[in-house]
Image (cartoon, rainbow, N blue to C red; front, side):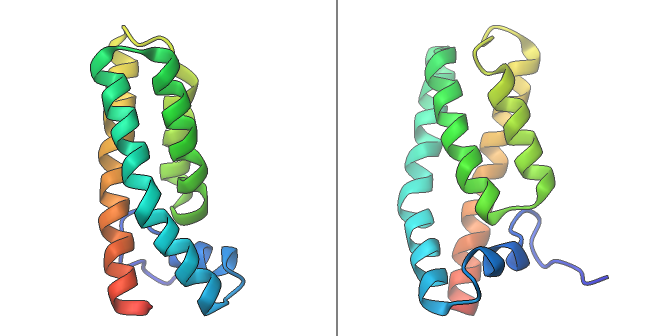
Amino acid sequence: MKQQPFLYLDEDRLKTQSMNNQEILTQMVDSFLLHFPEIILLAETALQRKDGSSLARAIHKLKASIGLFSTDALHRQAERAEQIATDIHTNETLLETHLAIARAKVLVKEVEVFKEKSI
């Protein structure tokens, strides 16, 4: 079994999503790096404001991008965080959303490294 060099970035999934087309891959990575950090900020802001509705929308957007770039485990966690995000006042929601956001930040760093090494 091939060991992944990244915790969350799934290079094989990314290459499949881009149809192994270097130009599409570059566009996907550039778009991700441009927009994904903004979505993370929206999620963090909603979490700080305890705005469950906005948090659920932001996590939904994170989940969509995570599905293109990441491992199944991270995508499942984002799905779980989205499902419970509107109930902002529970410890489970706080924990799940904080973890999803923290891991999304790691994914950004991994995509940056991938871009430097592979594109």
